[in-house]
Image (spheres, rainbow, N blue to C red):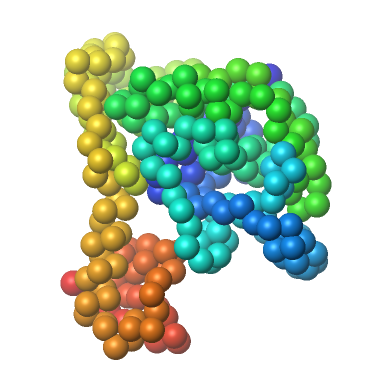
Length: 263
């Protein structure tokens, strides 16, 4: 049975399978259900149909997910435990399956969650189990998620450092020999988790607070706007992909111009 590990974070959706080449994907946490006319208009264009995996039909309903969804106007994004439903978390899982596999198959899904969401792990698992019919690039695939389980996001980060690529051997035993504190800064939450020597999780120190990169992006966008008011006065929404790029480069690009925003 195939296995997919899914980290559907509040900022970026990430997934990984055992395949060595093209076995790992990441796309922005953005999704919108389209009308039939919108979907047909977009996918009937041959160039888009051949290149974009953002436009897909899941269990008969048309969606856009990923970077292309950010260009479809205002996106309502669910955060925290409100994500763990079949019509939201499940759709992102199906979209990841459609990007990673090109034929029908039975799959086990291991999904990550912040330590503070552990009491909602059953909701997460139930949202992905079942049949998923995913149409991408005009081709439909049938995925059966017959098993699901969860793990704490900081544990996944720690194991990524301690274990080798195949997950079967240790590459940093010196970390595993001592007591560790893992700090996982995500899109919506920052999580702490303690790990005892030997890899045993110490759940007496497992905590999540609602503070993450999304807060940084909001503050950064407000500062960028206040320093370039004339340039953005007619733009109520700045493209999220350009905000992310500006944060990393110190330069916002828009309207054919570049605006310094390193401060």
